[in-house]
Amino acid sequence: MPLADRDLDVVVIGGGQAGLAAGYYLRRAGVRFVILDASADPGGAWQHGWNSLRLFSPAEYSPLPGWPMPRQEGEEYPTASHVVDYLRAYEHRYDLPTHRPVRVSAVRRDGEQLAVDTDHGTWQAAHVISATGTWGNPYVPTYPGESSYTGKQLHTVDYSSPDSFQGKRVAVVGGGNSAAQILADVSMVAATRWYAQRPPRFMPDDVDGRVLFDVASRREAAQRHGKQTAGVSALGDVVMVESVREARDRGVLHTLPMFHQLTAHGVIESDGSEWECDAVIWCTGFRPTLDHLAPLHLTTRAGEPLTNGTRSADEPRLDLLGYGDWTGIASATIVGASRTAKLAVADIVNS
Image (cartoon, rainbow, N blue to C red; front, side):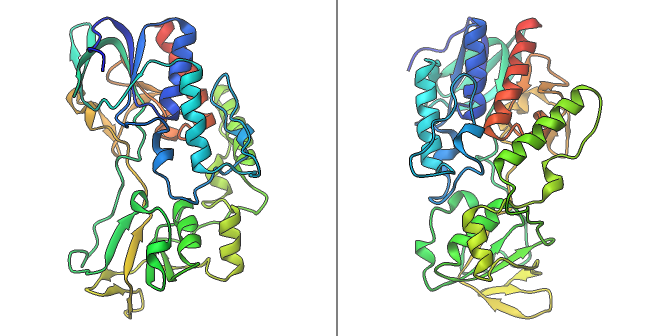
């Protein structure tokens, strides 16, 4: 591990898809930068996804800048492992200066620079790009009776395959893509019930990442001209990938109102009856991984730092990249991260 550098233009925190996209544009701009990644291996959050996880779109619709994702032989929709291979190869292809594993503990002001404290020393730079994503901060709601439940509780981040649920009874909680895909997986081997705060809206079968890409592109173009158009969320909540369509055809793709509480052996449903189950899988989303920014005392709204585009509203030497629509339309996707990285780096270079 090299010694921390005290003479940098930019420190990028996070070596996933958003951090690599930023690295590409920083390299092209000729600035001095490093990428610090907490993971021991390349691939970002994709290396931790469940075994059956796939992209919503063909490879050519999920490019990082400069080099499109190669198609995966025999697969229209690439697997998570294919995405990991692509990110690893991309990092090598552009010789991006990524140091790992380096865990960032704090970003703080240090005169005219920002100091980035890590478990391998302190880096200092004129600018910081935070691209740590959300996978490291899973959200599980507080629910009555959760401490008394004797079954297994896990979050999306803990799920890998349905193997351990063979012959069990499993409650899946959440109304988004993760819940639908994991339900489709687990229902092949277990008795399942799907609980959500409101019934999910299923997208038409012919809507995949290609359509979502086009919708996001139109919305971005409209916003540049001061106009508002409907975004991806207007199409629905759940993309009907093959596994989810198959679950629908098997008759398991329907939700129940959210249960009221957990008991020692199950859940109390909305009608007051108890359904005993062996496990609860919380597919309840994530929050931005931003503890390292606490020393900056940024103003937040609903837990998200206020930004102008990707630039922090409180600290002009800080950009936040890839966390979701509040840091750029569809910026939590591969292609969306590429777009917002380009704008963020151009803004840094011209500031």
